[in-house]
Amino acid sequence: MAAYYYLGAQLPYLFYGQNPSMSSEDFITLATEQMSSSDAALLRFCTLDPDPIDPDDPGLPEDQAAAAEPSYSHSVSKTSSSLINHWKEWERLLRLNLEHGRALKLKREPRELVDSPAEITAAVRNALSIESPLEAELYLDKARWDAIDNFLGNDIFSENAIYGYLLKLLLMERRAGFNTEEGFEEYKGLYAAILGSKEPEF
Image (cartoon, rainbow, N blue to C red; front, side, top):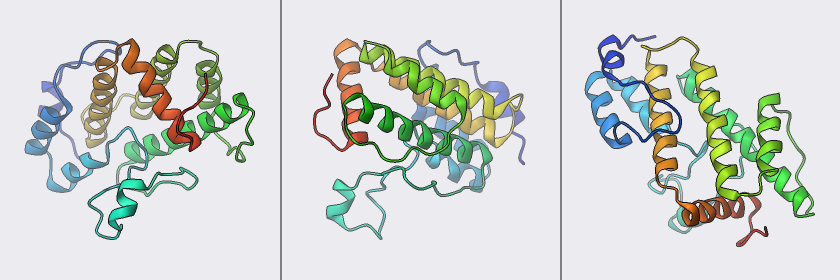
């Protein structure tokens, strides 16, 4: 495990709810300059989507690149970073639980629910009980933030700490981009994708 003391010491502490101290793009540039090439290569796997479709994947036909949607039914591919692996699996299970909960709420037949950590089932239950779609999304993002903290523990100078920092910046950027209308559209879009419907009912 690499130690990035100089890079870690430069970074301002991040608090949930504040505006990002720098853009994720600027952070990736800074980190890439100071990390080994193999560690820096994993920065591209730090995404809020646990299994994003890569439109540049040469093995994916053009028509599928635009239309394909991840189902999150299978475990995501592993990387050499335990933080990234834990994060992607946690987020995958969160989305599956959201899909299940929304299907039940809309009186649709849900897919079989997979075993998940208690904090995920609690987060989903609480989020689905929140009337405001935007507030529900913010609640879920706080749960995501806390999950990243739990994965990291006291690790603040390794490559995993750098990956966790980037994920937090992405959450902060997402929150900063929300206003009431945008938040509602974001929420609808998320569940439309999860449920495979064009317009979820509220």
